Image (cartoon, rainbow, N blue to C red; front, side, top):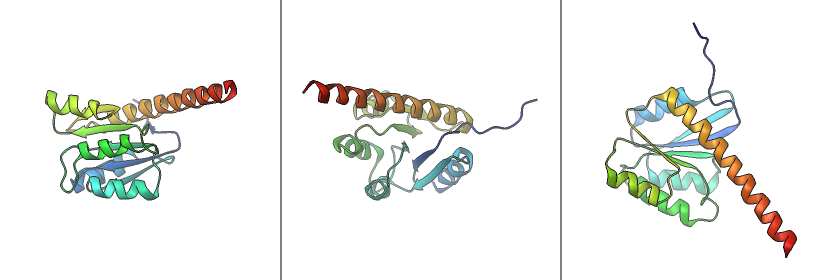
Length: 150
């Protein structure tokens, strides 16, 4: 018998973007921890508006949404120097090759399909956050090296 423990045990702010209000509520209940804050947006346009005023450590992004779909959000994120390295896990009901390939071509970090296994997703988020932090440190060290050589 095991006892419950939070998977997301590091300070992080995550934006869950999905047009399904039940999934947004489930995300906030199932992914939040004392150190991980989960915020939700109902579509891509709302996500972009939130990103304009607040920074996030990771985005969970649905592809099929009204107003602005996930593909458009990915394109905007990767075109902006402030968000070009922000990790994005696509979470969608689509599992066709076209959607998968397009999402990764546009800059998705990872891809999961619905229905979501919240526990498994928590572990995947933890891995992506840690890999993103390691990548950030490598970019910073590389910039320091270039600056020292100049």
